[in-house]
Length: 200
Image (cartoon, rainbow, N blue to C red; front, side, top):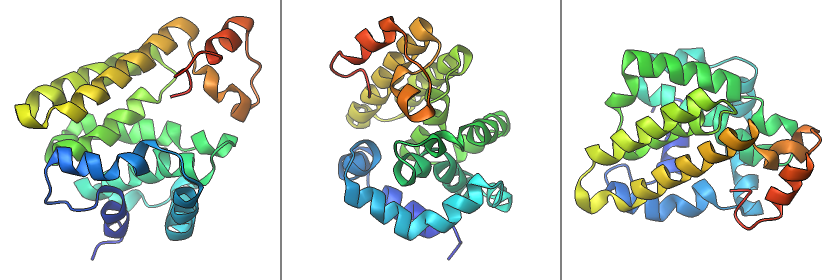
């Protein structure tokens, strides 16, 4: 078994299932907060996450699945393991660089549709309008590539990408990160954060 396979198994579950089934089974892990999930991520993958954040595991990028797993260790896992701290976002720059390289070489196209969501989420997480635009384009294209009966989760991913871009277009950053990063919020940002759904 490859070094990254346990992470992919934990993150995606049954790799043979349909995209909509994988999304339904893993939605709570991917997009919901539960302290026990963060603890599990820390216990199972704290060491490789730390190695990735320190610049290691570059050899994983030699295979599409390894590239995907390294992106998870840089983008998704820190948000669980280091939730509420600046470290939650400390892998973003490297993740963005890896995604750009992978998109240029077509690595993402070698992955199942549901797996491609997470490299594109790296673009959606960027506090940069150009990368937000790229995320929209990638999610829109991905939606068109899946069968009609599998599109429901991909409709949701595209909608979320559009909502993220609206925030970056308005503020140039994600106000919900300000407290974790020690940034001061403007009055407009504070008013925005008081609205339901503003923190994703």
